[in-house]
Length: 201
Image: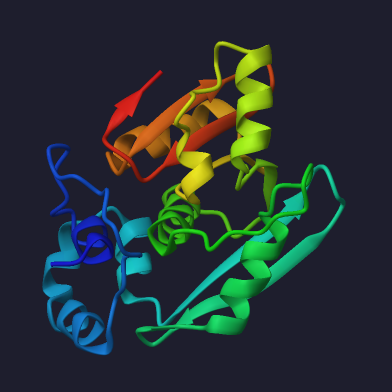
């Protein structure tokens, strides 16, 4: 069962690793299988049940550094949309070097589920998306809070706040999903989420 299916049906467990060498994909068969098992969604929280039956996945972003905004549907009926993924890669690029990277699809799905978990369709404010190795090394030299082998360099992490949602509530929702790493930075008003091993700080 795919990462998204496990997450949306509540079958994801903390011991499951989300690290993969290829982006996580959900094909039409997975989607139809998920739809056929909607009886299981009856025991899900309403927000996750709604995510499980969605035929589209939408995200809204605002880059706090560049001022760019994006509202996009990146997945429709089991298919990821290449054009939308490229737009997301662009707005999540390293603003210091202007380098874009192919963001992990599992990370996008995690954001989609996270916004459903807090019952929001509002804008994710991007603090940090992709980081080039040069940028990460520079930030690591300035702060002990930046990992040398950060998942940001692999397109598997993002630092965000969600408009209209208290940062503590967003952190609690992310922790409840048990779908990767969750970092809490209340003084800077953002959380970190990634699709690496389940952990928190």
